[in-house]
Figure 1: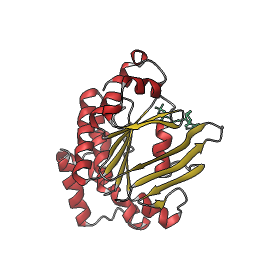
Figure 2: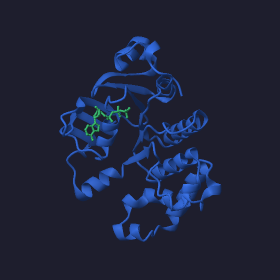
Figure 3: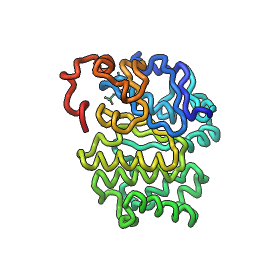
Figure 4: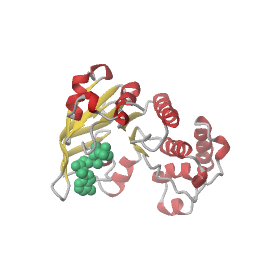
Length: 259
Ligand SMILES: Nc1ncnc2c1ncn2[C@@H]1O[C@H](COP(=O)(O)OP(=O)(O)OP(=O)(O)O)[C@@H](O)[C@H]1O
C-alpha cells in the first residue's frame, strides 16, 4: 500500500529566521485519522499549510500520492491540489453566496477558470452537492446565504465543500476552535464519519488533547517545529504530554485538556 502523504526531512524557515518546521519526516496512509497537537507556535499550522502549498517549504520534500507537491507548478500543482481537501477554523466561505454555491466551489479544481467564474456546474455536481448537504443535515438550507448561518452550520458547509472535492486526503486546521462544545462535537463526529465512510485520510490540527485522543487513530506531537511524539492515543501518557507541551499536565489550561 502506498502512502498518501509523505514528509521527507521537511523544514520551513520564515524570512525572520523562525523555524516553523525543523527536519520533519512522517507518512500518512489510507484510512488514517491523524491528530497534530502541540503548544501554540509549535508549527501545527505551518505543517498543514505546507501540504497544499499555502506556504512553500525551504527544505525537504512533501509527496502527495508519491508525487512531489513541494516542487510542482502550474497544471501539475493544480492536479495534486485536487487530492487535498481543506477545512479551516474560520470556515473560508463566500458569505454573499448560497450554501449550495459554496459547496459547489469544491468542484472548482476540476473546471476551467472560465467555467468556474461563470458558475457553470453540471447537473451531476449539483445532485452530488445536494446529497452531501443532506448527509450532514443541511438539506433545508440549500438557498440560504452563508452569511445567515450559525458557526456550526457554516462549518458543516465547509465540510460539505471539502468532501465535494472528493480528495484522497483531508486537512483540518483547528476545525472546532471557533465553536461551542456541543457544536464542536457534532463537527468532529461529522468529519470522522464522512472520512471513514469514504476511507479518506485526515490530518487534523487540534488544541484539545482529549478530542485528539477520542477521534484519532494516531497522534503526532509537535514542539518547536519538531516531531517529539508519533504514536497511538493509548501511548499518549502524561509524561509524553508533558514532553510535547513542555509543562506539567496540571499547568495546561482547560482549553488544551478538554473540548
Ligand atoms: N508568516 C510568518 N512569518 C514569521 N514567522 C511565522 C509566520 N507564521 C508562523 N510563524 C512562526 O512559526 C512558528 C510556528 O507557527 P505556527 O502558526 O505554525 O504554530 P501553531 O502550532 O499552529 O500555533 P497556534 O496553535 O498558536 O496556531 C511560530 O514561532 C510562529 O511565530
